Amino acid sequence: GNGYRRPMPTRLHSVVFDAADPPALARFWAALTGWSAAHEAPDEVAVRPPTDEAGTPAVPGLPLVFVPVDDPKVVKNRVHIDLDSRSADDQAALVDLALAAGATRADIGQGATPWVVLADPEGNELCVLDPRPDYAEAGAIAAVVLDTPDPGALAPFWAAATGYAVETQPDGDVRLVPPGGRGPRLELLRNGDPKVAKNRVHLDVAPGAADDHGAEVERLRALGATDADVGQGRRPWTVLADPHGNELCVLGPRDRTDARVI
Image (cartoon, rainbow, N blue to C red; front, top):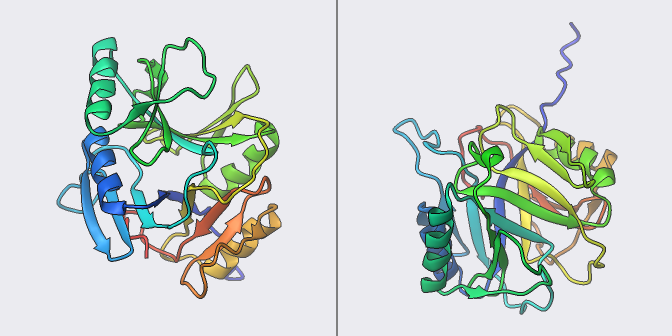
């Protein structure tokens, strides 16, 4: 017809950690996921799933990116990683591996739970989950978990930002599942703690190679995102905050298999 092409949704591209020592933290997460750490640039280190000869990820997963930030961690993170396990022995071995690699046990008031709460060497909380069938296709990272006071209210934004399908849980939390079911889930977890500082862990989304970066940014603004200034200066990506104030970056257009962050 008229040449108008409805933009495809941006997709969840990577999970970004602020770090005092990016290479060291990348090595820790590489050990936990079984993935490899690669120096992308002086100001970032990425840990990503292995790829086949065509560059397509050979296992489900999302790149983890570590960037240098001087600010100390002062509050519990609003975004954390849940690691998958396939058996009780697998869970115990993963906890032992994490502790040997520099993790510590963390108490965030969870009480007695079947999952294990740890903190990585820079204090970022993570969970080693008990075996759960519904994460069988997720990969090493079962879920990226985002705290929010109202999961149901935030779900439409993140569904639009990622193209993931919304599954509301009986307790009111929301799970967003990637197209086709393979890969980490994005889970919105009810938590009333106010946001008091820039998130140390945030999500990056990216449009496809044929999509328009500016149009995608405008689409997310229309869905309730606001502009965020985290001191980024002039960059090829745009920093926004979701409707509940959580920072995210909209990267430049790229092919679906392109894991570059810059």
